[in-house]
Length: 433
Image (cartoon, rainbow, N blue to C red; front, side, top):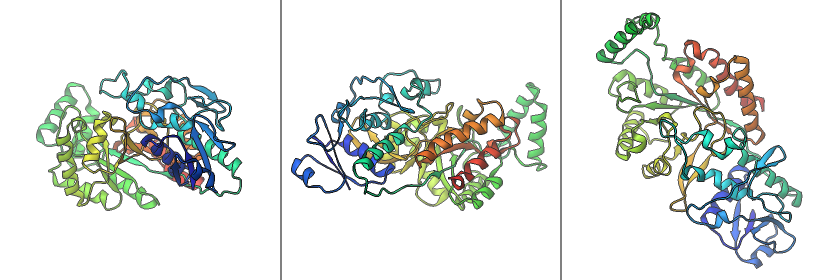
C-alpha cells in the first residue's frame, strides 16, 4: 500500500493517483493530510505537496490538482530522456516533472474543453493536441511516466515486490455498413444502379447484380472470416453495429430486416457486441437511448460498450449521456487520421467530469489506430513497420493495444489489400511478448 501525504485531498488527486498507481502499476494507494499518520506508515510512502517534510520520497506538486474548473494552464513541454515532460517540479523532487498533474491534464482531456478549431465533422483533431504539436502522440506517455515513478519508488524501497500486468489486445470491428449491396431495399438498390451507370462504374454494377442474384458474396460480408478468427483467438473481439436510422451520414441496413438482426445475434454468440451510435445520436440523448434499447432487445442483454459514428465526441455531453444511460464502456477516444494515444495512455481510464469535478463510472478505452490511418503509408512493408513500432510502444508498458478495423477492411477491395495480414500480426502479438 502506497501512502500519499498531501496538504489537501482533492477529487483530482484521488483520480490521477489511482490511475497511475493502481490501474497501471497495480499498487493500492491511500491518502492522508496528517503528518503523524504519514510518519507512522511503515511501507511505501511519498509526499505530494510544495515542500518535503523530511527526507522522504517527494514530488513537488503543481497547482492543477488543487484547482477547480478550467483555468489558463501554462505548459512548456521539454525533453526528458527518450520522452517528454511538462510541469517542472524542481531539483529536490524525485522526478523532474509533476507527472500526476501532467497525466491529469491529458486524461481529463482538459485541452478539448479549451477553444480549438474543429474539423468538418465537429471533431477535435490530432493537429490541435499538445501531443501532436510536441511530438509525443505516438508514445503512451502517461504509462511511461508511471514506470518512471515506479523506478523512483523501487530505488527507495528495493525490497518491495511490484505486480506486473500483461500486454493485451482488444480488436475492434466497426460495422457502419454490414453489406454493400444486400438488404438495401428496392429504392436504394435502384438509386445505386443509376449512380453506377451515370459514373461509368461498370465493374461495381456487375458486382452489385452478381450479389443481388446470389452469384457471389457481398464484398462487405466478411463476418464468416472474422468469426473464424475469433474462434481461434483467446481474447474477445468487440463488434460495433450501427443500427440508427438512415441519414446523410449513416447508411447501414434497416434494423427491422430479419437477416440483419440474425447477423448481429450470430456475432453476439461468439464475440462482444456493442452499439455504434449514429451521427445524430451523438448529440441527441433520446436518439441514443432509443438505439441503446433497440440493441439490447436484439442481443437480449445489457449493452456493455458503445462507440460513436465518425469517432465524434462532444465533451462532456457525449460521455454524460452514456453515464446517464449506464453504458459502462466507451471506445470512441482516438484520432481517425493519426496513429497514437489521444489521452496519452494505453490503459483504460475513467471519464473525469471537469465541470462537476467527479470521476464517473464510464470507462474509456482509447483506441491506438484506425485502419484508415494505415492507408497513409504506401507499401505493405511500411504498414507493417508502422504497426510493429506502435505495438512495441504498448508492449513496453504492458498496456492495452486497441486497433479499430471495419468489416469491409477484410474484403477483396484493392485499397484494403494486405490488411488481413496486418490483422493477423495484431492478434498474434500477445504470443510475441
